[in-house]
Length: 422
Length: 190
Image 1 (cartoon, each protein chain N blue to C red):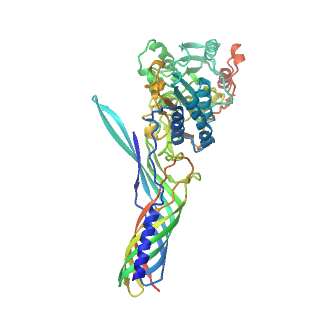
Image 2: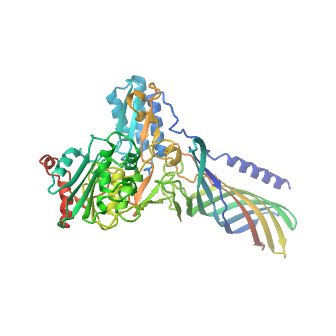
Image 3: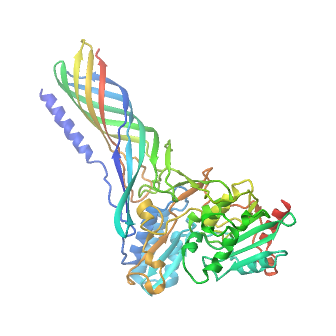
């Protein structure tokens, strides 16, 4: 019986001791609530925030630990010796350079000098500016053009748009053309601003009076309109909810783009399950299926890219132009609804988005705002378009020289395809 | 604001065991079993809503039901006392291998629509540590029937010491399986 007791006591003791062998968890800092007091704290907070919330760790090839090892001493030296604006900018460019997320932008406050810098993480080997004014000037000189309506109030304005009818393949029939600069259509319809009637005119002409709800009495439903061009070149994207009324209404049926996921924890690979992403066709949709061309270029971004992919997915849809930018994964810009709900996406001080006199709350802090994708989005074949973009069916590169000479080669290719079918 | 919590979930286990008596009061036992180590991930979301000008904090929850099937092999010392009815205490360790899994549930709103999923779990070679090992504890009561048969009622606790994740990133929070089983057994004594 003595042996029994000894064995039993030793067994219990070993069992209890082994319990303490387990490494326990720890609380991680929410990057939305950190106030940084030094360059190195700013670096550590952003590095850790991206480490925890970045949505592309499953396929990004950047060695994030190596970035920490390389740049941590540099930011420490900034605290010791100061940093001029070029050094500060270059260091941050180096930290995020090459990350796959084509939405990712860092807004950083440097209290030494009280200035904000903005850095885009990704870069495309192919890029150009799009001369939108030149393209619009060429458009309105197209032979046989009718009903040209344009509202253009400068770069980056969310309501730039143009509409017209162009001669079609068949005599007496037309191609309805719409160009717009941003997926802010529903927002525009609800906003009050000067010249709203002029801004809305191209959309009313193309879709109809209830343009924010799909197709009603607009040109695309006319019997003498046989084809459609949706020109989303230089379109910076916007609200993904606009895709249904603006694009899916032209497809006549719901559009499943693919699948999406977010994260369920701080771990880099703590992904949720894939969930189908379906854009519903609004009840007001086009009466008759017609050939549709999406005109795209390298400055077609985000929701505009998803729209091109939607058009590409239907038998009567064709994408003309060049590959799109590759920022195809949506985001929620509000940090309370991004990181705090999905464990992914934007984090930091949104005051850095404000005009200069209002940012940041504490001008002596090392404030930061990281703008990045909330959702990982793939096609129905589980292919990611992030960094790749939508590939055109008919490839026509931007030609600045010909544009200057009065020829929009991409528009010409779209018109030739619709008029000749090749 | 969001809050993710892992909650335990029921599963099942089925196995065979072999016990070798060293003394009347001490035996070594190995128990090869297929054991589910399941959990539910609850994702609470808190948000402000305004009705008739009054703002209130509302919440919604979404869950992922995870079924994780393991081959489990505990080897324990079996201390016992009593006569035909014997009380048992088990101490030892176990090793296991995560053979497959399944995920189902409802998702947070994704791009404006709520989604559901129900699919086999796809292992991630970088993250998932399929090897499982830890301590095994248990209590049991057995009854000798018809000279050679033991009917037993047992409760076992498998306390994992290995993380379900490989050490694939800096500042990683570990996740462990801790599994309790209730077992009904029938044994033949040679």
